[in-house]
Image (cartoon, rainbow, N blue to C red; front, side, top):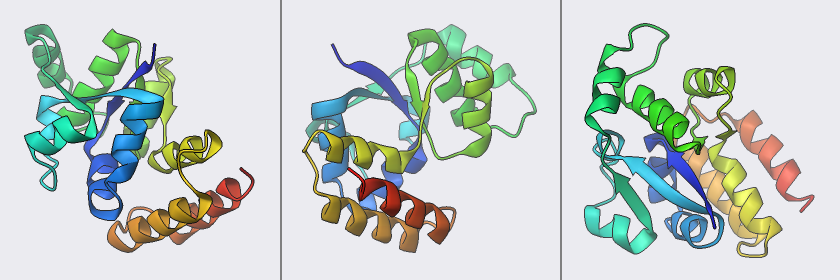
Length: 163
């Protein structure tokens, strides 16, 4: 049985623009991909129909989770980040995000985290993505997303070439 990964919007936005196939490969071969509905609303480049096609489960938070996320103040997290944290905690799932603050909150609370580019390394390791396709996708991501630095991509390229 695949582990559940609660996916933050930033990863989906990057892959929706750079290479949608990564999302479907992730859901087909690696994880059961859940996106909290408030987070899904941030992903403007994908439709509900795309979610079905790509294997994304749009997860409705419980009323208790919604209230808890709304009551969490401070710490530099948005309501959507709080929802990713809460759902990952409650589902004993992995939290996939590139947000450093969310990653730290998850790590501080014993929740496993996953960088967005790490997904492509995992796909290369199981033979579902070529190293060349992973590098090409990472290069597109860095051009679109100024938060992912060239250093992050060069570190990624070094790691993926060792696969």
